[in-house]
Length: 249
Image (cartoon, rainbow, N blue to C red; front, side, top):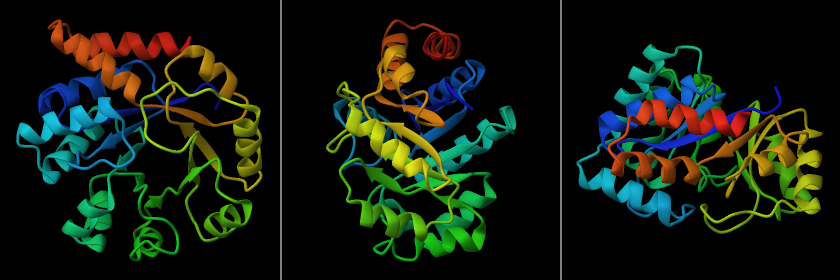
């Protein structure tokens, strides 16, 4: 499953219909899976690019239920494409943790990525994921101590684990170091599928990651390209399809 890309988009950006066109492009360009982000007014892990996209989506009136309807449309377009729903704890709490997990299952979401809810401080999210057969994908940074890695992965039933290749926020270019790669290899020893991202913007980075992960996560790069295409009034679906195809070559 090498050279796979988990692509990221912000629901409702640049418009609600535009985000569906972006999803189609990412699928048509052979992305392995989609990570669809519910926009939030205070996205603590996201850099300026995604922060602006979230802000614009919210200004246009985006609501959480619109995100689930977007997922429904994407699943109708491509039932076999896995969808990982990314959001923050505040949104999950506001909608009710169990209700949120049940709705995710109902709409065909394969996994939830909630970076500010971790094992042991998760308000029951991980147990509810087991109850409703929804992967709750843990997010680890490469600096987390190995005893904490052990604790999190022993208590996670998810097939996948998400590795953020550095602390801080997304968007800036990430140098992939030997320490990063050693950490990825360590986590793969847990017999988990590993996706890794934060600052992935080039084929060269994906080449480096390729032997150490099951999928690279590309986020801000696609959001930047979406803005460029939208500003030029170009076809979002065709344009984004070409962008991801170029990364996968």
